[in-house]
Image 1 (cartoon, rainbow, N blue to C red):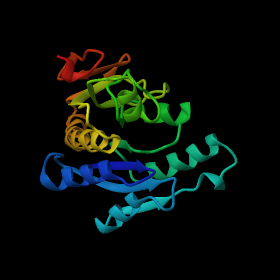
Image 2: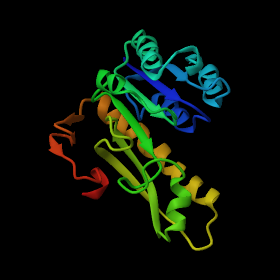
Image 3: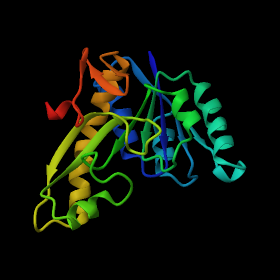
Image 4: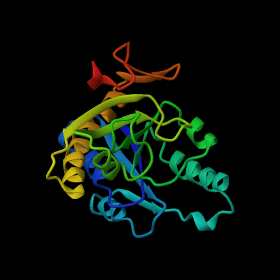
Length: 213
């Protein structure tokens, strides 16, 4: 059985998608062994408790700097012997040491069609730009914020009458579909990161990932 550790800061809807994926067979031979949050009130911790998964809150204020915090985080994570680290709305910039420690084993999901709109407020930025298309990207984590090689994207339309909340809901539905799928690819060793590129079934993926083929 492969071990998955999920890092969160908030609601944890993508965490729930990963938990459900383990239960319904999309993620085969995988189990979420721990959920770790930097926010005590993150609802994702409740999701973990309901699923009888270890839930941990690690406060940044308990540490002098980011390096010390990340070292403590590494120690907590490694106690669960993880095969994959999943970032599911973990709102901290990770140190180079942390990223290097889990190189090729850590995934993130970002609510835009990368490289468009890295950072925050992606939905509003897409709407403000007049984009007709928006979406989400699963990528490997590297030292560059939201800059690791893209593995898979899902696209959704933006309609003229849409509110931001409607766009968010549309994007999140796709996030919940593709994140468990990519997690399974990584656990089954179909997916790897080689020389800064995402490689699936021995084929180097294009810059926008598998969906661009």
